[in-house]
Length: 61
Image (cartoon, rainbow, N blue to C red):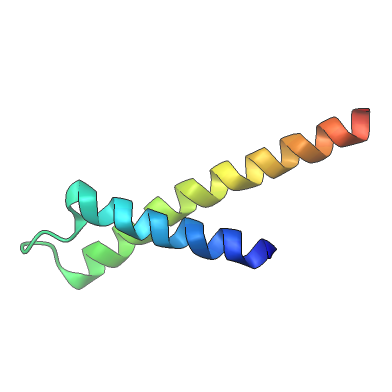
């Protein structure tokens, strides 16, 4: 079930990318791919930081 969380985040990030104008007609395929990767990296960074915080707090207590 852990992998499902990452799949959902990927779908949300691509949807957010589309809403923010990444799918504009004047954007090339390469630009779209780079924008999608950056949006996904932002979401992944947030998830990793949340998990690290949880692990740190569990280790302290």
